[in-house]
Amino acid sequence: MLIAPVDGGVVDGAAGLGHDPAMDADLPRSFDLAVSHSQVIIHLPTVERPGHRWEEDHLRQGFAWSEGLVSLAVPEHAEICRVRVEIVEEHAVPADCLSCVRVPFEVTAGPLSIGSVFEAEEVEIPLDRYALIFTVRPGEGRWTLELDGETESGEYSDLLEVTLIPTADPSFAILRAGGGVQVDRVLREDAETA
Image 1 (cartoon, helix red, strand yellow):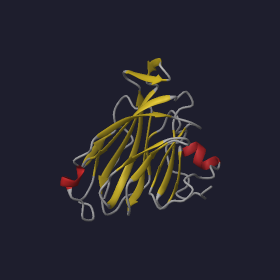
Image 2 (cartoon, helix red, strand yellow):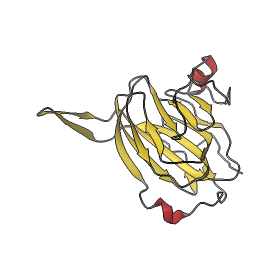
Image 3 (cartoon, rainbow, N blue to C red):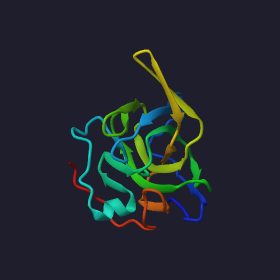
């Protein structure tokens, strides 16, 4: 069972369904992401059209979920963000986070796609059942982009953390409201895909 107080307490995960920590060799992993439409989309490769039809409850709670696919809200100001992905046994909600939500996510095929509407990274995650925790924190550091001989740079608008905790019994929760999360409780656990 997961325990996740809204006040920034610790989330503990029970042993997963066949999770092998030795397979986590390429994690934690970080990459840059140009966020579009104020959302991050995480999905299995078996999902043909990744995206949800956001309704008012989804907008207020900051996520839309269906089996193998989750769309997560980020603040409207988000542009180029740093994304960090890791598998851990427990998670403490950071004091500086802008928002934090937890959803169930079962990885039944790989690689997992983590990105936004127009771009995504493929990340190998061991097949298992997880509590997926999405945390938005203030950005730190600078990004640099070289394109056609031109160099652009700027500050990361946000740090987006995708934390996976192996567990046999994942659940939904709003761990911290703020940013793209307007309520302190889950309003809907399902969404229609686009």
